Amino acid sequence: MQGYRGPQQNHGPNRPGNHGQGEGPDSNGQQPEPSEQTNPNAALTLDPQSFRKPGEKTFTQRSRLFVGNLPTGVTEDDLVKLFSKYGNASEVFVNKDRGFGFIRLETRIIAEIARAELDDLPFKGRPIRVRFATHGAALSVKNLPEFVSNELLEEAFSVFGQIERALVIVDDRGRPTGKGIVEFTAKPAARKALDKCNDSAYLLTAFPRPITVEPMEQFDEDEGLPEKLINRNQQYHKEREQPPRFAQPGSFEFEYAMRWKALMEMEKQQYDMVERNMKEAQEKLEAEMEAARHEHQVMLMRQDLLRRQEELRRMEELHNQEVQKRKQAELRQEEERRRREEEMRLRNEELMKRQQEGFRGGFSETREQEMRMHMGGHGMPMNRNSLGGGSGAAAAAALAAESAPMMPENGVEREEEDMLQKSTGPPTE
Image (cartoon, rainbow, N blue to C red):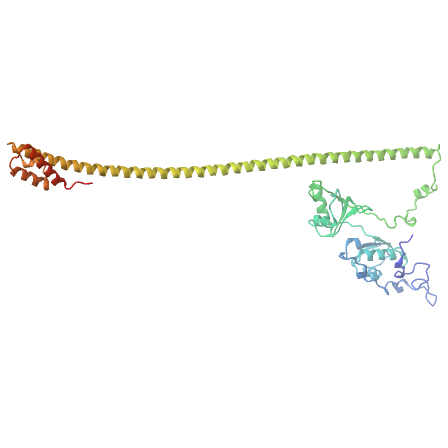
């Protein structure tokens, strides 16, 4: 069974049995030597630019081909010449002892064309096998959240290394299936991502469900298993003795076939039960998660409220302290004002008291001198020192009184009043 031979047949070589110049005898009737055979692909080439998607990366693992059943003695240069029609190649490797090799082309579409045209092509007397090589740096991602895109998936896994392709798998309606594919350029990056995601919980969105990462299983879904590739051993011939058929009821085959069907039905029921249990467990976990999230938010709000209340209390305390300080400052100012007023009042009283005491002292001395003068007029001796050391107008009045003659009593009183007026000066209003 050969690969797809669609529109690319115009670019491919002639198959065995076709009329062409690549096979069969020459004009002289002789078969050319293998070394003299020319590559029919050398005359025609494909333009890789015409088969490149916008933004597609080149020379990736997805465009790496495995070439098997190579003849003995094939070199890497021979393999490059075989694939020269399909543009430049990189990472060419040939194992001469085991007869296989690898070659990487520029794009995936070019590699698909090369596989379709060269698979089962006779090359130096042997039909070669061309398959896509296993991608050793590819990972399968499961449990993807609903809103994860190709770009977000690539961004999430680019922290582990350079990525060739990141793809979210969708169904026939374009709805995400929760699965994805991540392909790295090197195996160490893929191993790092696998170990890190398995040892920890890697979250891609706000939903706290971690993804699971596994090595991606490689399948060939293009050609499957042709009859010519089946190993025809003894077991093959034993199994192929009977053609496809329906088991007859009541026969040995029918009895055990029904038992096999019952076992497979039990397996299906077990899978369905596990799936239901897993779905119920997931729903329960989501409900618990939502309740815990709500409780956590309430706790955060409560803590924030307590913090705000504490800040308000501190602000009130600071305000009260500030008001108390202002009141104390006002009280101190009031006390200082009262103290100053009291000092002024006491000073005024002291001044008035001194003035009154000075007035009374002068009047007492004058009165005493008059009394002494009066007593001296009645023949009583008088000492100048007994006048209290008076001076000024009072002393002069006393001397004048001593030298003046005695007068009647009324005249004495008027004289005393006159002397008092002279000693104290004019009356104040």
